[in-house]
Length: 158
Image 1 (cartoon, helix red, strand yellow):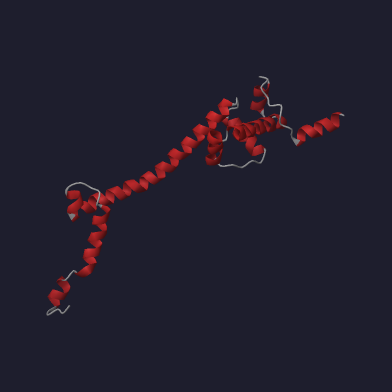
Image 2 (cartoon, helix red, strand yellow; image 1 turned 90 degrees about the vertical axis):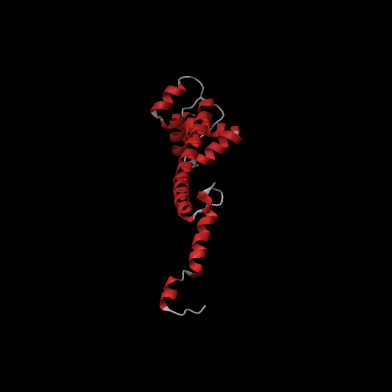
């Protein structure tokens, strides 16, 4: 491209503007009306859509975490163990599973989750945590869990 004067050189916008606008129009392709076709309007709506998308990614993480906690607490209540006692028992047992993994187990592997609640319950009673004493008086403590602490007691007793 040959420019005959400096004014024409400066005035030329060239391919850069085309590609810059094309990028915005591609992001605005699913909008309706002038928001899709008019650059000055499209750029406003694209910026707003990108801001909402950024905010929604954070909100999605919060929503999923709340869903996982709800599922795990429902699974715990099903087996007669409050959620906060379940967490304390798992931590004392050195079972470090994420909330997502625990919720997957509560939904898709109920027997495995029941085993985890029994382990947490037994460990809490064995360590003598306050809340577990009250639950243990209800008489629903699991009988099929054997821990090292129980074995040590049996050896001392005999």
